[in-house]
Image 1 (cartoon, rainbow, N blue to C red):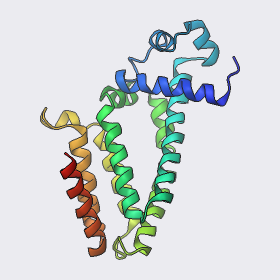
Image 2: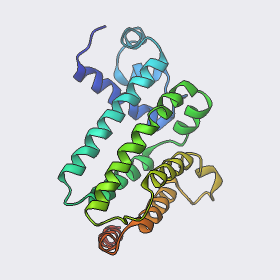
Image 3: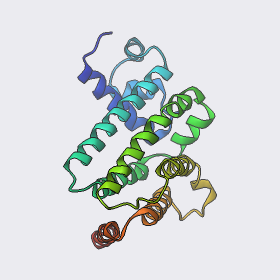
Image 4: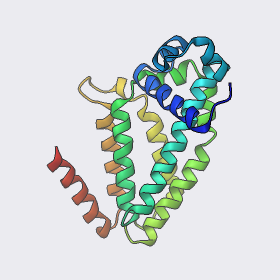
Length: 208
């Protein structure tokens, strides 16, 4: 079945919401068809298999997030404020995701994880370039190896997906994520960057 790009995007948006709520295993073709109000036969005409459907949804959200982050970077007054906004967006996403989403990817859908891992170098290099802009703007220290730091952050973010089961029940993924990102930024900002960092988290606490 031939669908327009907009129709595919709308489908993937709904499918991604189901994946977030139920995990990958719980995102069945029956459930998706029911939520989309189409027959399962029609769903199979759009996506050949469940794996194709899940992959399409993950690719969709990856493109959407990349475009969103690039828009944040372009509109921010400086790169540190852009990074803080992006971290906040990640934090909101984590608050909604069923932890089974990550467990299922590890245990049941290794081919999807390989697809994610294959993009790691691209993500790390992109992140490094973002931080180097911050160095040029005077918000990040210039005496650090950002290639190593970006890889370290990537590893921490990957480990984050499995940390919830290692912490007490009253500790959420959001709590862990916020601690990791705040500690990371405090270690690399200059005094100029520290002012923005302090203001951001002071304002955030006021809102709460």
